[in-house]
Image (cartoon, rainbow, N blue to C red; front, side):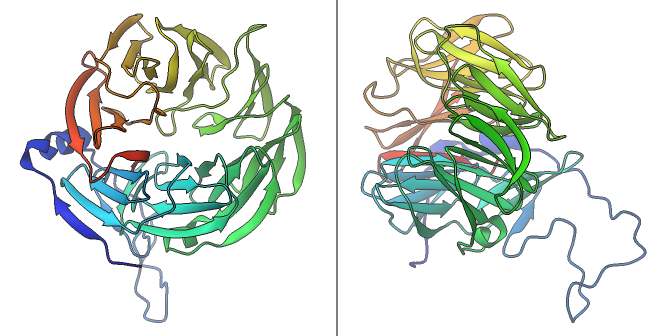
Length: 395
């Protein structure tokens, strides 16, 4: 594949501001009191804790915007340096999903994996931030609407309408190689430690590393939408959700009778409270740790929503007029932007701890919104072409 080419963004993008906002000092990793370095190869050279081949480790998140246009043109914009890197062209995407590192796009019969080249590994008591070369990895058989989820060791790609999912070796994927370990019949498949949580038909099952049932299962009518949080894995059901806890136990969190169910969940990476659409009424917040739903009503129907799950309980959505809507659930305060997106276009929304990003499909821009400051548009970032698939990576 071609070598990526880079362009320096204009100084007006104020990348120093985002760098300051994202600066986080990584906690030092303990060596566990070992008496000396361990030999990793014939030379006896020790590899530091957290070492990843082909990647450099940083002291702050290496946040990038990864975008694909309607023609398949693919680019990565580095929010810290302001550089835009052109990657190889891909199939013109009809569907897309991201896990915070990889952007997966699909057409009817083929799915493409793009590596944004930056990611975060949270070990609980400390965090690692990595950067590597962004690239188009490869294609795999299977297409249609797509979902992607990853752990440190596995990546699952699911085509819900086909009822099929594939498991990939994530370490190999990070090195630019697609290694399938198994395929599973499922409409939802989530990596969960060294196991998987699968939803299919009318049940949620815990599967082993080979994709075989472990015997743990829970009834779930019409499984659709899944997410992994700090408090467990979530699979949406016709009447609520099934939560699989860290101990492998399952619980059911029922919605009020007659409520419009969410069919997808979104949240800031790793957080225990997630959001989903509540029909025309606004959004549902599911507190996975507490096992409770909360309805957040909005003036206009939302077309996309995600939960920040910060101290003020910000919920960020895009409404049917193309406005970014920010609800502070702790107080009920609501702030909106002017219409930023074409109401007829698919809303593309990503966020981190400080900012939300929405694409303007008609204007080759990504708008950066400060959701904690009255939905203020902090800046608009120019991209080479109008994006129809989009991810914020490095989180």
